[in-house]
Length: 280
Image 1 (cartoon, rainbow, N blue to C red):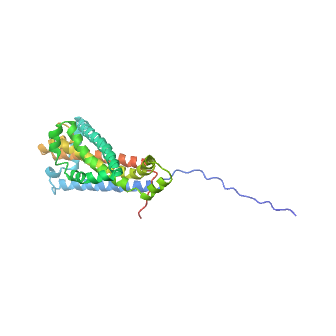
Image 2 (cartoon, rainbow, N blue to C red):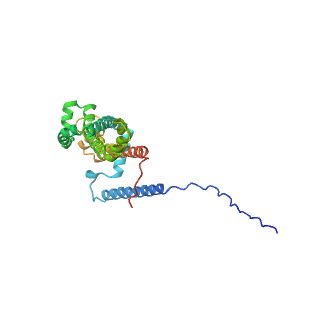
Image 3 (cartoon, helix red, strand yellow):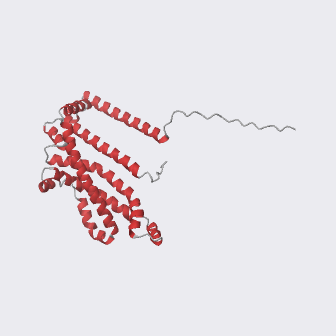
């Protein structure tokens, strides 16, 4: 009796088709499209309100006038010079503020007795309105770069310090205890437990302080400066050139948005080990 041979049909391998965007990428594109749509609606509405005399051009200008002013300043070479000065003040003050805030936050978190002694003074200093202290910074450090850097530093350092200190003190005590029982030294606990747990808090403080850093540099320039975006805005307000004022504000928004975007990319890169929790 002949046994029937089993026939196995092998389906041909499907040719790889074009790569489809992931769900998160599609969601990002949809979100970006909605953002651009809202921005376009806002600009068109603004333009129409001014053109139909609902709003006065002297008080709020209009998008086309602001664009014309930007083109004029670009061709005159004023934009890059002013932006370069403001960015220099922002970056230098921001870097010093972050380094000092992280160092102070970790130091005081590991010395709770010293933190308890200094905490009232830190609270008082943090409650002082640094923007109102701008004239004092000008008096102490002059009208040059140093006074603006000091103002930016004073705004950034407390934000980063508060986040770093809170993050270091929120580390799970059970994890620290188990690490000690397993023979970990103090340096091992700091390097392998405290630093990874605190790092997201530090990054959050760094991102939060970006807007304050830019604002501090601009406000310092508005008090006393011969260049920079703040001086540019003051010059426009002196001749009631609303379009020039809004052009300066637009440049500030672009700078802050660009720096924040870079901060998001860096945060996503360095914190890629942290799982994301989907809320709904």
